Structures are given as C-alpha cells and as structure tokens.
Image 1: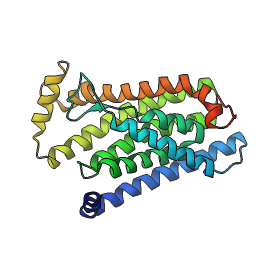
Image 2: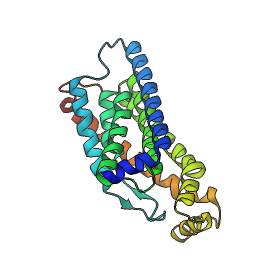
Image 3: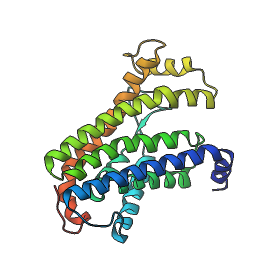
Image 4: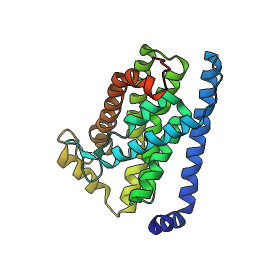
Length: 247
C-alpha cells in the first residue's frame, strides 16, 4: 500500500489527469443516460442504494477476472494477455446504465491498484480504463435509448467495433511509445517480439504490429464479452433487477 501511495506522489500530475478523464467520461455518461431516460419517459435516480451495492459486486467480479490473464498465440505474452473483466461490467451496464458502467470500470481499476499496484506508473491502468469505456459506453448508450433484443445486438456490435478501433489506435500513438520510453526498450525490439509471435506481421512495421497483434486481442475481448452478455443477460435480468425485465 505504501508503494502505491509513493507512486501516486511521484506521478501526481498524471494521476490528476487520470481522474480528470474519469470525471469527464462519467459526466458524459450521466448526460447521455438522462437523455435516454427523458426519451423513454423514465423518472428514476441514476444511482440508488441498491444500484450502488450491485455496482460494487460487479466491479469485484471484474477485478477477479482481470487478474486471471490468458496468453494469446498472436501477440507477445509479456505485453498482451486476454482477460474477461469487461463481461460483468457489460452485463451490469446493461442493467444499470452508462454512468454505472463508467463507475464499474473505475472501481475495477482502483481495486486492481489496491491489490496488485501498478508496474507502469498508471499508464497501463489508464489505458485499461479508457479501452474498457470505449466498449461499454457506446454499447450501453445505444441500449439505454431502446431496450430490446435487436438494440442489444446492435449495441454489442458497435461497442466491440469501437473498442477494437480505439484500443488499436491508443496502442499505436500512446501505449507502445510510453512503454518503450518507460522500460528503456527500443521500439525495434518490441516489433521484433511481435513478428516472432505472429508471422502475419510485416518486419519493423508499427502499423502491422497493432493490426495483427493488438486489434485481434481487442476484437476477441469485445466479442467474448458481447456474446456471453447476449446469452445470459435476459435470464439474469430478473435476478439483477429484482423482477424487472427489459430485453
């Protein structure tokens, strides 16, 4: 715990920027959720005591799944692994709305930091939060405006596409350069590791690296979370929402 506080103090400016992004995304989600409520003629609090308790539960499940990482055959295992932490958050976001989804992504990262700390001076943690939000925000907003099976499918498809595109772009312009600088790794060594793992990659090409190593990982995460959510949300909905069905 002391090590985490020390890293926070050492990277105070970055941590403040991190919180600024969290607050901004939460406010955007809150505004869109209120618009959806107005369109649908719904009048209820965005956060209730019951919702808050459920948000905590889904976040706890998400952080456990986040810690259970699985290597993938098409990307360097030291940098990229598959986890299923977006699954409970996507289910919870469908049930409780976009604002709850952003809160769950934040709590997941906060719990992970408390349990495991950070090895990337919060760079990887911010990336995980924003990439997660790029899935759950568009998906939950689409679903919030029209809650039916067809809308849920469209929401999951759009969310998965958004996460794949955003996650791939973020790796190219931010994450990979940041890791290269932070760990004093030459970018050519990172690209060589990608080529060694994935024969489809063009030698020395950053664009090729993110297209064949990073994009498939984000796509796989989105598809897995979406498919399972579409199968289990309707049966779970009466339990999660205490009898209220919406899909």
